[in-house]
Amino acid sequence: MREAVAITGAGAVTSRDVSTAALPEAVRARATRTERVTQLVLLAGGRALAAAGLEASDGAPRPRLGVVLGTAFGCFLTNAAYQRRLGEGGPAAASPRLFAATVSNAAAGELAIAYRLGGPSVTLTAGAASGLGAVGHAADLVRTGRADALVAGGADALDDDLRRWLAAGGLDPGRAPSEGAAVLVLERADRAHARGRPVLGSVEGVAAGFEPDPAGARAGDGLAAAVATALEEAGRAPSEIRVLVSAAPPALAGLEARALGGVEPQTIVRPKDALGETFGAAGALGLLAALAEAPPGAALLVLDVCASGHVAALVARAGDVA
Image (cartoon, rainbow, N blue to C red; front, side, top):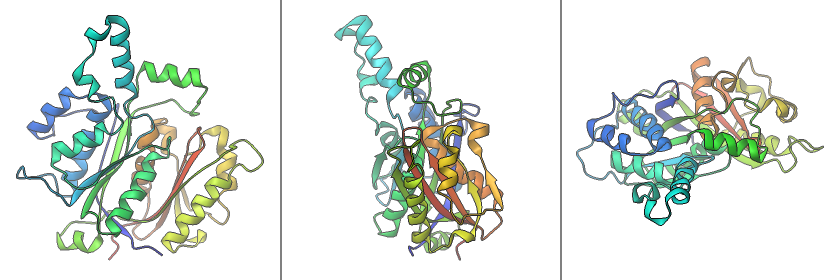
């Protein structure tokens, strides 16, 4: 059983809610210059840090605060725009500003620069399961003392270039693709209590995996292993789960059902039915949806299943860990 890690802030943004008005002036100016996925991360990250009481800074680096971001496509939109300019105008049309954002860790770096987060800065990619993977990695970094607090979650942006790529590659997410960012602030519970911050919930166990044959005879084995590992890390029995976040594409619903032996939740939440497939943001959005539905103390199981075969499971508890 691993030590639970407290959630003390959260921020989310989708294409329905993109406003930079509440950002600090310097961050707002940075957001207007950046590409789309970084804008989403700055918005969500700023909201999460403010909610956790960690937004303000005197301008000095904060070496014990950091960021772990998960993304399925990262800089895809920027790369497409950069290549299009090169194709149309040759080398003279290359944009230094765009080039700086053609790496998948650009969004995490921009968030760290904007809020002076001098601790770990990590970007993970594992399809739509990237966001839950990032939360799990961040929880481990906090447990092992690598950081006092981390902004953790996921983000992906969407445009016609990505829609065409998804269609051409046959990667059907099963729901309308969408964009968004959702992040949490994770820290040790004792530190949160010492700062007088309310605790929204706690991350108890996270595991990721892969389904090598999602439609085959062994479909569900990868997710079942991830669920079992997350429950073991949390010290939870399947029967303790009260709220489940279901996230499999409709075509893979059977895979999810076969992986949930012994889990009989009282409430099932399906945020992707309302928001669409938000890829890297989906896991953290699912956790926030579950926390909103769960009574204090309830155990939650958040799943994510990607059409690519990437899967992840997260066990959390609603309310304070004290």
